[in-house]
Length: 403
Ligand code: HSE
Image (cartoon, rainbow, N blue to C red; front, top):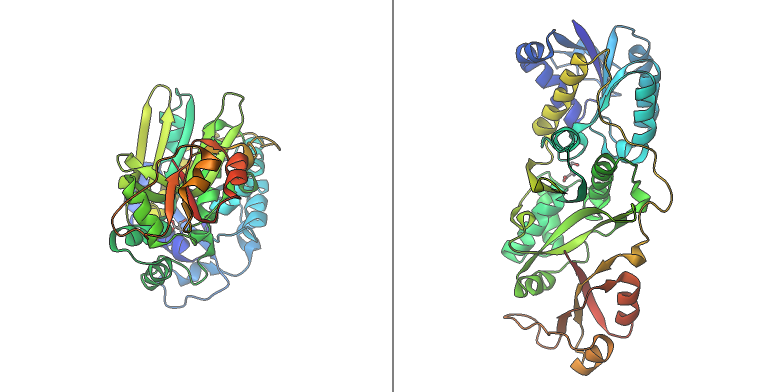
């Protein structure tokens, strides 16, 4: 019998505890040995649960129990998760986590400790929930030079954008609906301001390119400013707006990394990813484009990925597994000012001459049900600094990057 412990009995942690009980037989078959939960750490009591005797409020009960070989961290956030995970690794316990903030911020350090001590630190559930992405990226695509990863990495905002696109709903109404359905938190900032997607693109890029990309190196914009009118303009030029996390490897070895609403061509594979679903596109020199699609959140899908990592760790208790990247460095991601893109720009009741004086000849966008007194156009591809310098001369209503 191999014993594990779970830190945090929230949505994901309870899903793990339940799945470990429900599927004990197939899990034992896959792992080659029975696996059982010995302790669950939570500050709350759960007296009515059939496994209520497993709960403890003392982290030390887990840390000091030499019988626990694997610890699952599903507390979320940095504190106390970072401290607990580090101490578990230093106490020679392998760790599985679903915590994207932890991995995006401290993954390099925790992977180094795990490597030094011949342990495993796995986190498949931290990106794309139940979608298998980190293992395929690390193993199945290992022969490729991956040069770009782009994804719809946040289900809540994708649900909201789908409602805004399909029904013309406002941001506020779409958020209220997402909250009503339990997708968005009462404080929706991590989702709607792009932080969740930022953490996920950091993990993907760190793994794909072998060096840690930290969240503060990624220019991050959310979807709060989007209006139904922006959605209509996107449609008028044959595009759809999606919140995209994107990391591209440049020839000089540095990365271009961004999280922002972007206008995708309607025939782009990610443009078809709707509702709460996630889609992650990996571009490699041998494979071309490959897309991973599925439910990126939720209790059971996320628990499914966590328990698969547990099984993997049980099978490799004395042999360290793959997954590794080096610490990052300042200057690894190019400054946002140097990033190049074209933008769809709306200007308030401007005259066309003012726009052409700044950008030269551009095609103005016309379409049904667009505000008649506005002008909208697509800029040439320029770096952000040049673009913003030019746009400062115009009465800009909104600007959105083209993918
Ligand atoms: N809030 C996240 C989402 C859940 O909506 O995708 C998993 O990170």
